[in-house]
Image (tube, rainbow, N blue to C red; front, side):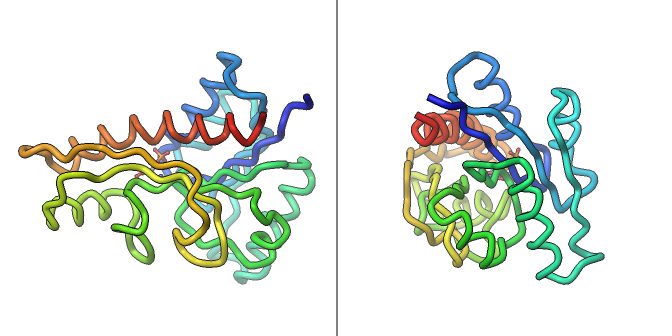
Length: 193
Ligand code: GRF
């Protein structure tokens, strides 16, 4: 079976991206990261890609109209014949044209059990802060397909993570992040088979 081409979109540190890169190196995924795209020139995830000799692209959404910004993303995905788009800590909403062109071929990882603690404004530490403030005993991770909404696409995988009495935002985020890495790899593996 042909190796699936992955396009990974990031905005930050890229630990999920690193998990994908490492898993591919260990031969666990029938895929290859062919391009890494970020809206943030300082995203450490770009460095992670450069170290591996993977094509990295910063697209300055501040310098472009939303239409031009999304058109540029789509151009790059087509140039690399990307089969599956992975949003790994990507904080911008994707344009309709990309979602339509890549229908059911874009996945996102979210650090909660959707439909809880998701949607506009729920990203990164804000999710875990809300979880602790609400006092829920279980949170978790969701991998879902991306549609026009925010965190609203069909759910692919979920795994629960216990919230501990003395959890801080940081301790909870670290424990959830470990599950994210594992669940994202599992989802990509499934979709590349
Ligand atoms: C994390 O909060 C993760 O839950 C979400 O994006 C944030 C950054 O992840 N997916 P990463 O370390 O940049 O992969």
